[in-house]
Length: 303
Image 1 (spheres, rainbow, N blue to C red):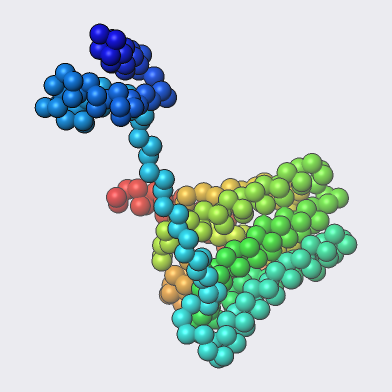
Image 2 (cartoon, rainbow, N blue to C red):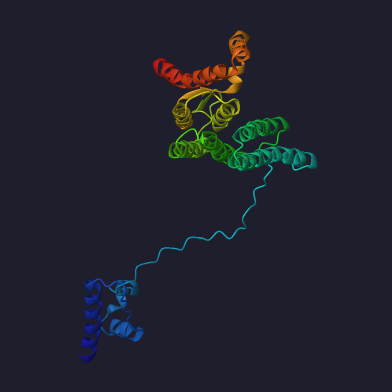
């Protein structure tokens, strides 16, 4: 009786622990308490697994994820064959990008010294080097993701920072300081958004999505260099309009597409530049800015 009561108490404790549902408590019966009652009371026909099934079992732990201990693979800056000739070409292309960056920084220093027109000419040189590095990379076959990132960072410095500083220096004294500062900051913010969107958006071979930063900087630099005789309010409004055009979704034709136009189309701007370069430049810029909304409406109607 004493032995049977001992076994009953053990089973009762097991059932009570199972009913309480405490997953952290695991009760394991000693072997002499399990095997002895089985032999005495004829429990040999039951398997040991069936008796232990009444005991609470701790929840199984999820397997730990495998740790990838493979060494990190380095990505080469120049994909493809890394010969001495290709490395020289790669260095030449990136030297053009760095030249655009250095010219942009120099333009900032010159504009801070009060020489806005000289700084505008340096910005035009930035535009030339920015177009040169991309053309050389494609022609020499050394285009790479590293070069694309370098070009984007240089564009932000030259066209997203230097161009607003040059515009602010040109408006100093003729426009309210707060209004000139807001217009310059707007150009910098829209240039950053435009460059970031360009890096992650699918490319269209025919049109730009919004005015590119390079073209916007070229327009601003030429405006300062030739000295358009416009009131300060009109200049600030034009700078703000150009900034918003950079982040717009209007399609603007690329330069390669414009060069394919019939020669007689270019005859009018050439003659106008010989007569009055300032007025002709203003009309060409306004016409290009208006072409985006017109193309957008045409695509909406034909879709």
